[in-house]
Image (cartoon, rainbow, N blue to C red; front, side, top):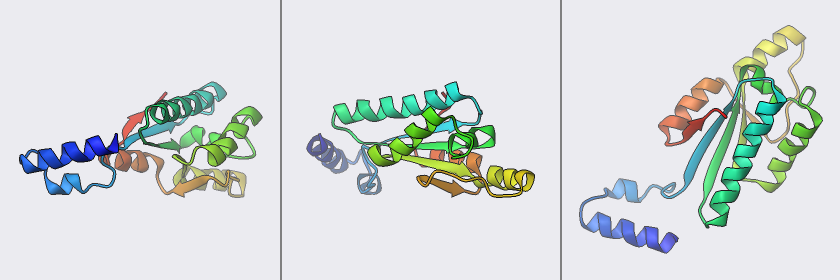
Length: 152
């Protein structure tokens, strides 16, 4: 599949239909999905994880790559909190860290700051979660970088 894309890109470059800058893009041909979770609802948490797993399996089955980022903010941060996530959901979040390296979890730093002030300590997160200062800003930047943003 990659040979076909490379050959097609080279032909389009020669024809002047694709710029060399686009042809040099290392993400060319990689699908990009950002999933938003902002609710403390186990059904929605499960839905987000199901979508990530299904999309990942789909593209793997046809030999294509996909990068998936799950962004948790507001009440959705409970998806990534080790102390408040439902146990079955928590097992899946841990499992993603081991079996799906193409899936990244992002926790909103602003939400964590608010929770820390209210609870007196920083909420504990899964080790496969990274913190970005503003979850919504992360979604905007992912969209600008070519990600499709979906809220299941």
